[in-house]
Amino acid sequence: MKQQIPSDVLRQCLFLAGPTAVGKTEVTLALAEQLAPIEILSLDSMCIYRSMDVGTAKPSTALQQRVPHHLIDLAEPHEEFSVADYIAAARAACEGILDRGARPVFVGGTGLYLRSILRGVFEGPPADPAIRGRLQKLADEAATRGDHYWLMRQLEAVDPDAMLRLHPNDHRRLIRAIEVFELTGKPLSEQQKQEPLPSHERPPHVYWLSPPRDWLHERINRRVELMMEQGLVDEVQRLLSAEQPIGRTARQGLGYKEVIESLEAAGGGDLSEQQVAEMVDVIQTRTRQFAKRQHTWFRNLEECHEIELTGTESPEQVAASIVARVR
Image (cartoon, rainbow, N blue to C red; front, side, top):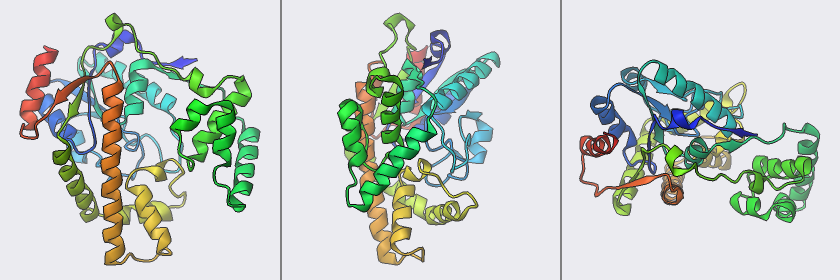
């Protein structure tokens, strides 16, 4: 079964994607002035979690009051939230925005969410606790023997394409892929194939901002430094000490994962200046690598129209170029 938003709804939406730190928020504010009335739908897989604000660069309360935002703070950090859940929430939000006479504008950098909105997503069979428990138990036993790739090998035997897309530490998705094969007899990768809509049914206004690499790297480095100044470490400590601590998926968020690793290496105590500096360097490096992967996502989505930036444009100028295309 496929979860998707009707094409007639999608065609009334505007999409603005791009790598982290490219300035999507500033451009969106300018769009709100030039293309009113609009309402914003987040395309960020970590902004769905409450209490994860600093590390996600979540829009401030003031900004959310200035322009209505949706698909933010939908789940607690310990909860799981699937792509299918996101599609269902996005469809309801879009229909509500259109009923109010405004234009839905999707903004963010999660390529998986963007592709799933544009093409729909496969909803697999319900979870089977017995299968999941058995696979996790066997994986844990293998890990005690120093074998951290047991799940990868099991998945490679039944679905090598899915295996190539997943990280060895992502046990949740590895187990899900094996589980789907056991329940259906078909590889998850085959069932998840997402083909674009026919050209006449596609949303016409799907754009992504493509900046110069060095310019973006400088902005990424500064953003990470700003997150540290705004209290990223304190935010992570609160999440870890909560009555229901941050869950497996949320703790993989960029920035959160690195802070958690550093705190655990320090035995839960305060980080030294050197440890903080090393952690910041790791976050900056991984964020730059992530931005490169985002480029690949958007460039390979044939529905996406690239907007090349020089780094000298103001947000108002970028917004004006988008508005000209829309009109």
